[in-house]
Amino acid sequence: MLTRPKFGWSDFSLEGTSVYGLSYLDDIGVEWVEQAIHGLETLNPFCVHGSLEPGRMLCVVSYWNCYIFYEHEGSGPVKENKDKVFEYLSHTSMIDFCRYLYDDISENLEEWASFVDYDQKDMEEKRKRLEERLTRLKELIAEKAECFGPNRWFS
Image 1: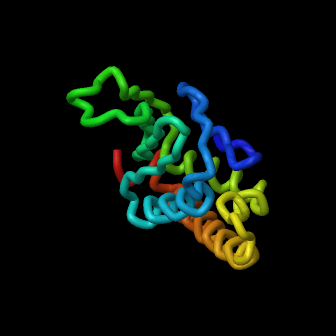
Image 2: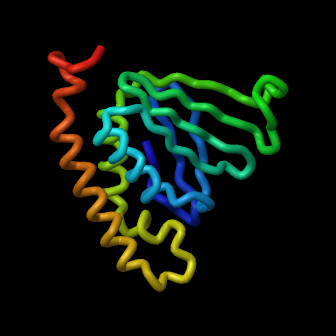
């Protein structure tokens, strides 16, 4: 889902969608993990985003699908700029999105901890915080998996 960060960039893609080159303007590792934690804690859809330079990508993670919106740089209200907003659908459930996110961030923890850390003064502290959040995400994935299984709570 997320490639290993390199030179301030990481590619993001889900099944059935394009590849989006996300830049260092957003702290993807920390921000996305926090959103995923909130989504699983509340069992409510959540949104992650990233800057593409130019443009923006928004990914709404719902129960059974992810909805990706791409906006060209400088696009205004959708009603006026329908040709500058693109929508994609991926049949990736919330629990699968969170699993992919956990795996991708955990696998490259050092790179994600330093992704937006320009002066590297607090990198160790940031790495530790990210590690703690990943631990919480892993716990929630195990705890909430049954909500997305055959005996799920919602349909």
